[in-house]
View: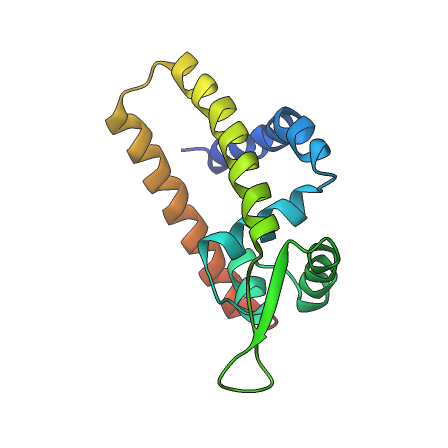
Length: 149
């Protein structure tokens, strides 16, 4: 087994995928990192900056900068949690609309490409399972090497 084959195959998907969805993000003047955080907040309501940073494996200052940009566009709202130092984040109605429109458009593109593959549902779910296992393994490795996430 040649380990680089899997990793090279995975990483070469990134640029074409971003180029594929870029026109949708451009319609909303969003960068990929902003979209991923907006999506994270939609999926994880009442989340915090620290939780987002951990889930996305990005530094807190980077997360803070992206959150400020989303807040300036009135796409997210923050409320004080039980611990007054904690801000709980969720999408505003405006942010929810953006999220739903983008998700729908991106899902259509993704579906077109998956249909072109003609893979079985079993193969699809097995691929997702393997990628999730690889992700979990790498996150575990990062956590043992660094404590900043």
